[in-house]
Structure formats: structure tokens, C-alpha cells
Length: 158
Length: 196
Image (tube, rainbow over all chains, first blue to last red; front, side, top):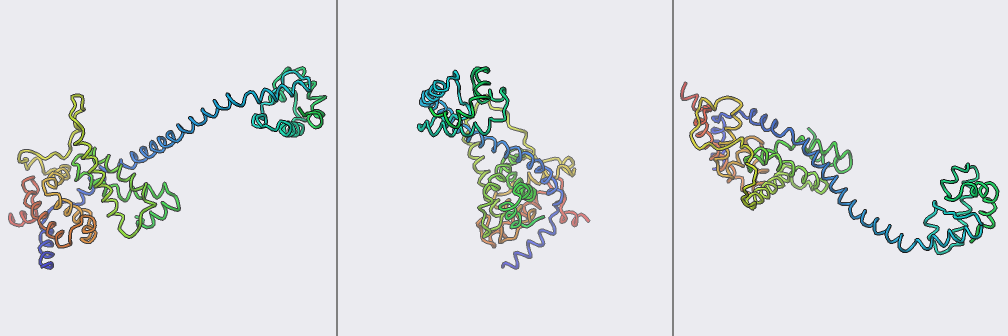
């Protein structure tokens, strides 16, 4: 039965006049622009995925910034105040060490700030120093050239 | 052309982009042809082919070689087409709806003029038209066997029909196509022989 069907199919195929290569060629031609569209779509998809990832990250970052502004600002001010009061150099702000400034262990934080600054800032000019310390340039120059190393190693404790 | 398992290996642990382009290059025609037969619209078929290929690429790392990629990608494409058709049916009519894109392979209402249909560039459209007039099972069986040259075993896995049933479907499809071809200006070998 199956063999008979195979024979019938073979006969029918032989009599069928279809330009198979033309049909396949046309299909190939029609589908040729799919890779380009596919690439575009994949890129858009990646972009969408990236944006969908970025949105919650951005929200969390915004919340953290608000929390920081609300709860950590007073701590920073306390440290600035104690530093300026003790050294008499006006208002100084250690902008490079915001996280240490937020630490509850002020003494340890101050030690770390001072020790690192003493090493790094020895060779810096005054205007470069201003990048690290915000205050009056005159006081700063004096402070850096004369007192800073001493303050940072010995007296720089709040 | 690289073998399927080489492409999958390259995609999983080698140059994924390169493997993806090989994969698309190898299967774009196959996927597009399935979509075109199902949707009968070249633009929609292009969309469906894209979606199916993206889905296939996204799941390629999970592909198990216990079945062939052709079988797997066929199922993905059929599912994508079914979803598209379902969404299309679910879309309510709107006055602001844009007109349907031109259908390249429209089934004619009247008998075609044979003289107009014999040009080579129209042969593809004629074949597409003829295929659309076959019952779905016969159409798929014929296309997969005749154009894609799948084995009956592969087709059986894809279509869920016995090999014997497929052979019967295929034979009926050939007979119907052979009958329809002269109406569209394509004279079969049988016809030629009888004229000679």
C-alpha cells in the first residue's frame, strides 16, 4: 500500500511543472531584509531593556540622595564646624571625603582624612588644593604651606 | 552552511553575534515561507518571521538537540502566526484604522487570464495563490516536502500526522496543484505531453 502510494507520488511529482528554483529564489529575495530589521529590533529591545533597568535604578538613586540630604547633612556640618573651630582656618569643607564625614566615629574619620591628605597634598600647589578644600585662598595657602602637615598628623583631631 | 549543533555551540560559548547571523541567514527563508503560507501577507509574514527568529535566538541556549532545529523553529513560527491572527481578530473595527497593506498574493475572484499570468515574475504569486486554495494540512505537507525537502519523519514530528497520512495528503496536494496550474497559464508536463 505504502509502496504503491510512493509510486503514485513519484509519478505525480514528475508530471508537476513548477519552477521550484524560482519560487525559492523569490522567497529568499523577500526574506532578505529580515536580518537588518532583526538587528534593529534586537538593538531596540536591548535599549528598552536597558531603560527599563535604568528607571528603577534612577528612582533608588533619587531616594538615596533625598535620604542623604535629610539625615546626613547635620553630621557633615558638625565635622566641618569642629575642624574649623579647632584649627581657626575659617570654614573648611572636606569635599573629597563625604562618606568618612558621615561616619559616627569622627576621630577615626578625621585621622584617615588627615593622613591621606598629608601624603597626597604635599606636592600640590595652592590652586590645586582649592579643589580639595573650599575656603579663603589666603588662609588656605598659609594653612597648607605651614600648618597643614602638622595639623594632619598631630593636631588634626576634632 | 554550518551544521545546527555547530551554530548552537558557537552561540552559547563563542561569538554569539556571529552565530546569530549564521542562524538567521540559514533559517530566514524557511521561517518567512511558513509565515507567508499562514498569514498570506508579505508584510505580516516579515513581522512574524522577525518575531519568531528573535524568540528562537533568545531560547537558543536552552535548545536541546533531541529534536531538530527545523522542527523547533517551525513550532515557534506557527505559534507567532497564530498569536498574530488572534490579535488581528480581536482588534475592533475603527474608522481611523489605516487601510490594509497591499496584499501581494491575493486570491483572485475570477478566473485569471492565462496570457497575463505566464510571466516569470508572476509565477511566485500564482503558486502562492494556488497554495492558499489547498486545505491547510495539504498546503503545509506539500510546501514542507516539495520546497523545503523535509523527510516524512521530520514532517510527522512537526505536523503530528502519521507518515502514511502525510503521503496521502502530499499526493492529493500534487494532484490539485497539477489541475489548477493550467488555469493560471502554467502548462504542466502532463499537458505538454498531451499536446505533443
